[in-house]
Image (cartoon, rainbow, N blue to C red; front, side, top):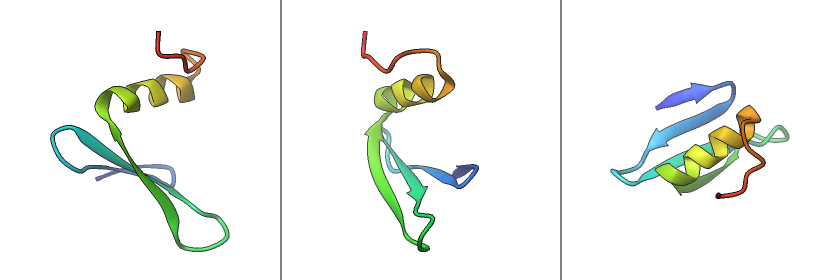
Length: 55
């Protein structure tokens, strides 16, 4: 598992990464699974290197 700030990133299996984003109002967060390619798009978007389109 890797933590960036409060966001937790875990490898579920060979194709899926689980990303958990905390909820400030309580201790629970939202976890969603993405493929490595989707995670790459998310990372580029967060870093401001793309507008988020899948071109």
